[in-house]
Length: 191
Image (cartoon, rainbow, N blue to C red; front, side):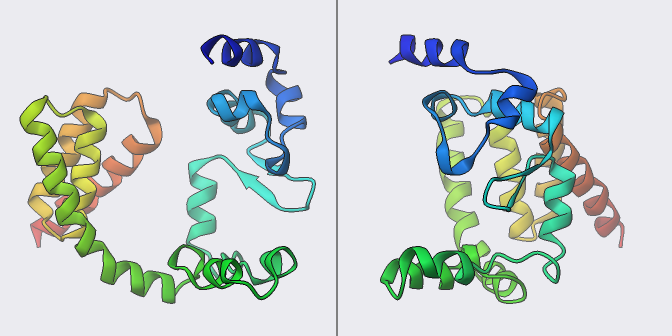
């Protein structure tokens, strides 16, 4: 499998050619084996990529955040897209009522209710992992998010700071998120 993946990757177009051929409805083997070169090319050459079906594929963090926070303009409602594909089926019902596909305020309300349920289990799993090996930067980032969701501000602040220390700037998006949360948490802890 490794040889075929390497061969497919070396035969794949690069840069603008890769971007021009990108279509989520027709993903090739090279993308399935390693999507990151495609994501990089899209971010560099066409960060708001128009798909053949008319939809847009976003690859920059700031663009995604802007869309996520503007539910009046952008929607996760899949009724229009999925009705022709799935008809009145259980799959259609799932994809049009699931939390993932709901827009605010329903999504926000339900997510806020569910987050405290998952965070303690995630922290327990991270603690078990930490007993076996030294936690790496991504583990500290997940730990910080869990503490944040549980509103355990001092622990969240410390975990975000540990993540930044260990990551060394390798993950720009997570570093940005961590620095923003550190700033906000410091402000909230001063109150």
